[in-house]
Length: 343
Image (tube, rainbow, N blue to C red):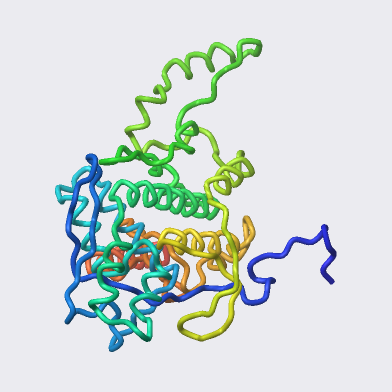
């Protein structure tokens, strides 16, 4: 029985809290405009162009948006990327969903009295957004998603994502929460032991923080899991607060208790928070318990995020990633056969 002020209800225990689907408004193109040195993307469409494709499945879930936004930022922030980030953002919006005024734009485009002459100017004006605002909203979402994924993988015994969490990006650097674990702990001045000289020599030989930050593949010299509670607290502190309200799901027509949203970033943060809240307990003995179908995770080969569609899926559907998976499986099979022959 629920005890007021004692029990805490989780997402799974509050009736109706679940994955939302949203109808999408897509503008076929965007015009770049500058005001006071600020780059603005202005949506444009003609009378014969529909903002809502009623012949196609235009419903997107928060998880699909989260995965797509993370992969967009990963591409934009890649130092090797030579493409114009503004063009990449405009292309993403045209292919997926307009990023702001999610509900109000859909309501206008879907209004029973809609006609182009009366509504189009208002819709296009309301759809203008700043490129800087988009990037400021996108960056923390991506880096927090990576931090969450790296922490989960670390608990499962895979420290690769945690070691590579920090990186020097084209526009923003990754979070450095795990960097301090890559070098030996500092010896306190008041420490006295027979091994003090050896420890001091070891620390003197250790790389500085600035030196090893650029080496993402460096092994951990301290176990980050000793600070697991701190890392969890840090992760939770990165999430925004949500304003909740009753909403009707666009796909099922069910009434759900969900976040009040203004942008696709609200949708994605909400989806990520559900993923964090519903993850398996720490050190769960079932290695697949945190990998339920529909869970966003990073591909073990390319690093792009995807939505898991099977109980054993660890790689995205990119052909090169599937080829890498097959090579690894074949190599592991040969190794198992070699061990069996030696027994």
